[in-house]
Length: 67
Image (cartoon, rainbow, N blue to C red; front, side, top):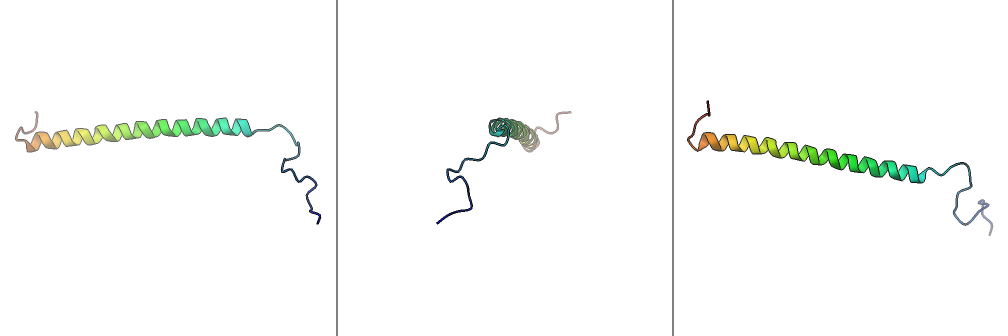
């Protein structure tokens, strides 16, 4: 049985430079950047929730507003 493929090893023909290492480096860099942004966002969310909780505790504990 013959196939339409001239090469059965699965390797692609040489048609220019291989950009896969560059693509992998860009994807890895993008992943690190997204993790950094996510960590900063979670940090900002934490401090926002912490500040609101502290304000509610301050008011409900009978201290009143600080001004």
